[in-house]
Image (cartoon, rainbow, N blue to C red):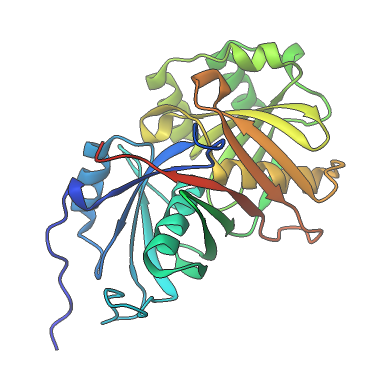
Length: 302
């Protein structure tokens, strides 16, 4: 039997879904492509670049020969890859939430297993009228103190000083499927004036193997405001970042922060795209983080 070959894919095959929406507005737009066989890598990269969203998820049934095209034939396991306009990334939270919404709309409410490049996770989707509630289980987490040289370079990039950092949450490298630098600021004003040069940010992130930088301000023990520069993928800033939220939550657990098992994250306000994310934090060090939110289907092609 000849291996299945993916037919040519086009932008018309990609669903546009805003993940982690704030009601009927906000959220982070993601592309979702679902088919019987993943397109060639070069084609996925080209489609993600042409679409221009910060991430596009491509999914095909993990079991050979299962198309999932017929009624009641929903595959429960999917092979998934994520592409930004300028790079492939190992894990993307908001595109996973968008994929969960698309799977729920297409095949019905339920839990789906996702086989990523370097991890196996899951996503759940549940239709709620025009919106879909979705939750993902992140890959395992870890964190470590950030190297001094990296912290100094990042502060210079964003125009911050050490006096503007929150000493309760020291700079750290945090991982939940992808590597992030976490910088906690001590005021909402400092977070609001974040700015940087895209090319300089890309060089810094590529040099240190970072997917994003998580800039955070703690309004309270369980409420955070964040911004997420994503220069490594060619995107100045993401309005909602599930992977970054999972990494932050895992780091707070490692730090002994009084999170009470849950944090709420508001992101995208300074971009005019307010987004809401929730992270449920279990007690076991390194364990997966559950990240939840709602998704709204966007009208028409981009």
